[in-house]
Picture 1: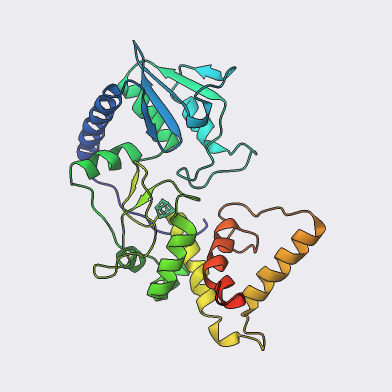
Picture 2: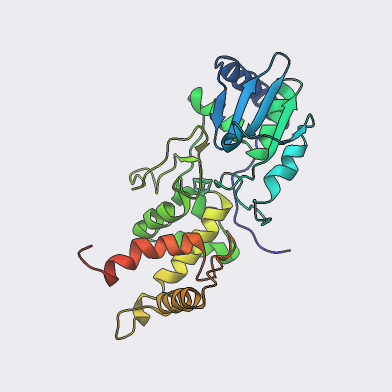
Length: 278
Ligand code: SF4
């Protein structure tokens, strides 16, 4: 079995069911209160005479949408991007369009939302109640083992840069609530979305591991001041641009030079060195 970063442990099942039920009711009441509907990440939810309707926010006026009354279809919808690629992070702004779900009641709406944005309704509710537990980066890193243990050594600056590259609204629609540790707030734009992020997710931990590998290259800078991976990324960018085939790597392929988050990290850490003063 392949190794994966560790995320938060669950609570007892009876307690979870209660929280799920109260969250579902609060969420439905919040939707009921808005005639024009509510936007939750990339989904527009509206109260109907009977039940609820969900569609992509960009499909407000679209026609010929695939309509279903099965909330479980949300699982399929959330699985792949428009281009047919796997979506490892459901809160990334790449939910595909072209569908409408019209479901019978609040319970079915919660089922669909839970496929589209796992745990988001519960986190949304707990935050409003002041009960959402926040886990800092350092606390999360302390739980990691195996190949992910090295994220414990990531510098504070590395955490800030990784969070800007991995968590801002351009790549994740959750609102980042966690900090580096109890004394060190994250230096980034945390976003304004409805879904809170209480703890670094497994995708972030995997990215943090890659950034730690970059940090370890510091002593290998060449005469031009570049580390081996910086050199590799620049060469790959030039080659891709020159060939006219700029194919980006998949979302979680951080070992690939043309990965969006990796390039966002380079923009923060390498571009200022290449173009000082800009
Ligand atoms: S850790 Fe970052 S990338 Fe992961 S869900 Fe939270 S905000 Fe999004």
